[in-house]
Amino acid sequence: MKRFLEAVIDPFLLALLATVGLAALFPAQGQVAGIVDIVADIAIALLFFFHGAKLSREAILAGMGHWRLHLSVLASTFVLFPLLGLAAGLLPASILPTVIATGILYLCLLPSTVQSSIAFVSIAGGNVPAAICSASASNLLGIFITPLLVGLLMKAGGQAGISLAALEAIILQLLVPFIAGHLARPLIGRFVQKYRNSISYTDRGSILLVVYSAFSAAVVEGLWHKVAASDLIAIAVASIVLLALVMGITALAGRWFGFNRADRIVLLFCGSKKSLVSGVPMASVLFPVAQVGLIILPLMLFHQIQLIICTWLAARWRQEMNGTEP
Image (cartoon, rainbow, N blue to C red; front, side, top):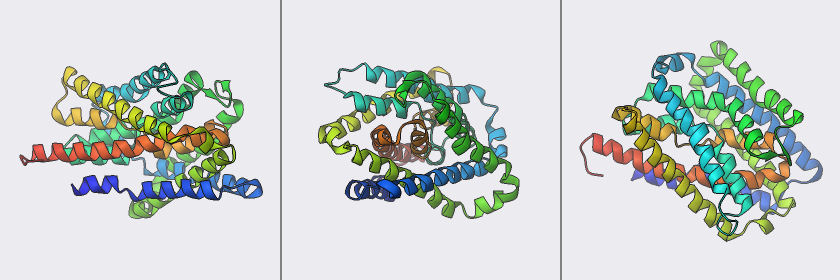
């Protein structure tokens, strides 16, 4: 119950809501918007630098042997989710408005989370080394696969495919800092490990900056005239249905593939997550700034829903494993 309440009353979610409210009341415009965009770009580069520095080669090598499990997680993340996202786009606009379906598809193309996936696997009594490997591989490959899928399945910047400017931004803002951070790990690894809690504030601060920049531009473009309360309800319902489908399919697939309990837990939790930390910065690189607010709105709601449901489920499985009543 304590973990469930902590998931429901997530301080970071409150910070996100406050940031959206600030952008709604005081959107950055003119020169201020330009400065915010520059600071956000620097923050994104710093975020991916620390992502690279935190990636442990030893942990990945320790879990690489279970290739069937890792391929199953990647298939759920980059095949099953995109197919469901495309299916959602086929629904009538009266059920799922086009602008919401676009955001749902984008979140379906994102990599899995790292920290929360590993945490849930650990709580539920799953295979933690394999979870570290699967989640880290998903995040690393997502830097390449997500932009590719966006280019193939979405219209980024108003045109099919990824523009040269977007590709350059991906390389300079995401890939180069990530590689630089990973190469610097032998030098700064101990520092990163020692101050990981403080560095996590850098991650969250970067996301808040991008969210403020994106929603400021969206508000200036008339965001709240395009999104009604009924749209938010539709996003919440679509997120719950999407998560339930993926968790159900991965649970069945884990049994069908003959995985043991610990590995089935890895497939279910790592294969059903979508990363807010990766998704928000990527959206700011892949899409025009005025569109980013609408694009990431479903991701923000899905992120919170997945935390609530997975916290409850992991705690329940832990209690079952310990032979106690939920």
